[in-house]
Image (cartoon, rainbow, N blue to C red; front, side, top):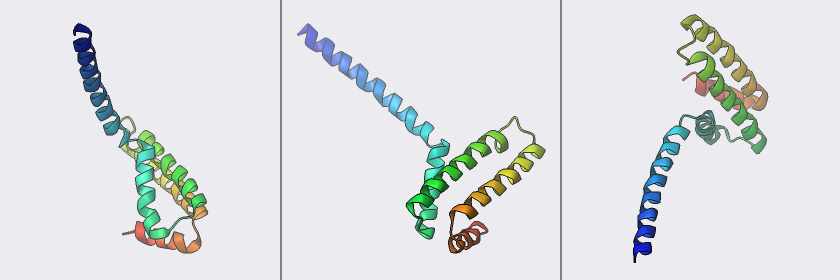
Length: 116
């Protein structure tokens, strides 16, 4: 009986510990560049109907944009002037990646959506 109670207590403590770890990972994953890129890509895919190759290419472009924004634009250690210059630089690089990956029609539709 003593072993049974100790096994039950161990299982209860283990279950409590795994719930808090799971909650931490869920809150942290929402801010990851990959998670943000996946959401943005899914929203655009509804309108622009990407091919599989386009999805892979654009996913990498979105991740790179988010990483650059976190490091060089939305970082408290970067001055406002540098952040503005970095934003223009990385927006231009992202625009170039979109132009390269999308067809002319998709790119025009994306630019029209982007300006709204």
